Length: 202
Image (cartoon, rainbow, N blue to C red; front, side):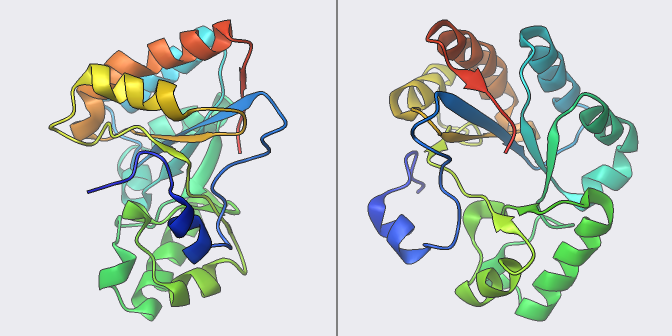
């Protein structure tokens, strides 16, 4: 189970993390988790380049090491990088010291002040440590592109229904998400550009 739109009780439980940017500005923030990988990240970059849109990529350290050329392209094309741990760890199941060491290992490659915990599952003790060095980026629109039971059309509608000024939208550049990302991403960009929104990096 997951929430497409971050409910109030989650925002109340985790007040020190960022759920959205200013609601005053007609800006949207696209984010992509888990890459970079050759199967989908270059395609996403091609789409972003076509529409002249920038995004923020929360990268897994092990994938940066495997695919340094794609990571360098992210940087070269002006996108923002976030830390997503080195091994895509689930914080709830990982001792704090091991989790923080994994974050530090990823940070040797990402060199960023942005962090997003994989699965959004970090203990409060981990959040308290992380917030000293990072802005913790959550979201207010989770596309559901990772959900194998979700149709591409429903993924698209999830984003359209919940996105507004300042929304942080989560997509994934991982294997599970490919059919839904390929259907949804260009349509989302076209839809909101026509409505006068701009896309920005975090």
